[in-house]
Length: 317
Image 1 (cartoon, helix red, strand yellow):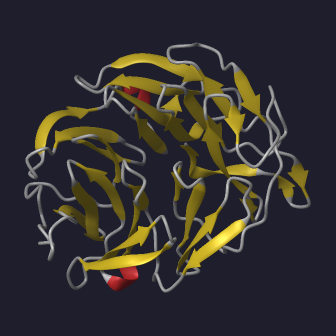
Image 2 (cartoon, rainbow, N blue to C red):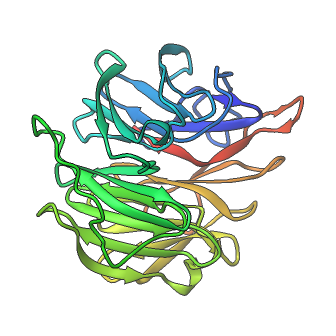
């Protein structure tokens, strides 16, 4: 799927790339989308639907696995981050222009509920963990963590759940089970791992391996919450494998064409990485712990140059 020479990739099983031909080093096809910007991507493996947020267009578009438009969810002012529940019933969207988190029902691809997060909260990023929706809200230079339980008939918004911390930019949130990981992007990157099973975040570990601390663009958390893969500025070009328990480096996944800008881990542990590469390989697929990719993908050139993968533009189903 492509817009303005930018590709968003959905990978399914451990061997195939959606919206294209299956095969080693395949040059996969692209489908133009009716979006003017890219915020985030989520995939519903039950209904085989892909959700893509368009902040400038104030909408979420829904496609099938071939990139064909199925539905549009409109009136989502500045919609950014997306998070899907483990049962694939609901996609939550951070909608800063409405000071709200919006629930999209996957069976109908329509808005099911709007949860106000409070005046001038501007929720930016979010994740689902421990039965709650967690969101990072605020404006520069102070973003904070909040959450609510969507199972409540009238959910209570619990704000400032890390009262001693404020973040200049809204960090990335990733989750698995009752584990919530906060990741800071930028020149000096960092990670913090929390247990949120009680509804209150309990810090397990914070820090960052030196190899991954420079310009982390994205990170992925494994389904068992035991491993993080950070798309960072490790030299030579590689993503960093990190043990969640102690945040130590356990290995690296070398790529050929620049620093990785997206990372995704499949349910079976297979790792996908992408780089921002106009004329080189775009996506690299690794078996867990492998030093070389067993498959790569290169997108075709187009009238404006070579297709590139958007930052935080990979996901698995």
